[in-house]
Length: 448
Image (cartoon, rainbow, N blue to C red; front, side, top):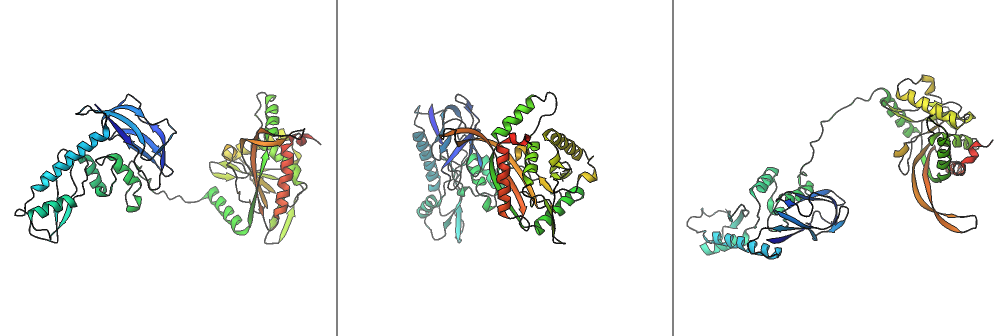
């Protein structure tokens, strides 16, 4: 019995290490040659490593998630050996030496009388013992004597060893095996896989790649066409800018949880009605945000009432039902209206009069909100607000005694995109800062 150390091969130019993402075996398992050993992930791809030998796994390099340097031992496998040694490198050197002797022995049998007439180049294919062969390499025609031709054959041969299955696969793929790096003494399926994954520039394709789906042209009609037209017109006509601010919503989330605890079987309050209530309170001091711009007439209309558009994803596309006079509704009324309009839009029962006349829009992706968004303005409005997802992070705060301390906080980024023809950057930033102060002290939402 002997030990074979399988070292992590070079699986890409510039790759220094790879992460173990899956082990296909455990210590004590029997593994066959070319069977999956582990999946290794680099910053470019995930590569499946295959065992180059048949044997019993006696050691694995680490756990899933560990980083393994290129060239270091990934697994140790106990294999059947003739000399009982545990020196795998010694076994490999002996095997290589035996194969080299076989090549030289066969090469010495080449004789000039049986050779084909002199040409610009002669190809000699040398067959080694077992299931491996050496690649055919041209021998210069200037070599005439038997000894010279034998020596030239030995020196020119690119000694490439591979099983018939690997050779057949390489031939089908059009891969020159002399270009493939081998981990060990012969080229295996894993070596060919690695070459294919990083050889796309030469026209090769990665193995086990799913066939591409057939092209599916879809005519843009109905709601989808209307959305496309509106968004294109908005980006063509409106010079957008986006401002993003981080807001601590720890207190607001605690307040929301307390209110939901006493709601019984009634639907729970989401973050959206609180944000709408805060926007309606804040926008009264920033009338340029709650406005519509008639660019053809050159007239900006600032509105006293807030008719808030609420971007809603439906099966037919993005719809924006409008909450009329949002500033006149409390948290629970807003929650009910949000639910009613959302359900109507998704069920196709929204009334036409509930889809127009908005003065400001809010768009939220909920838990998919991302770090920051750059929402597109719903023309002819001049602003759109986009809350993003809430994350928990440690922050530095100064307590009542003036001592700085660290506490866990729930943080949310809030984006606003504005029409720069109507809203200046200073106005947008001032509006968001005022909104932030109100959201971070949500008890003010219930004050008169």
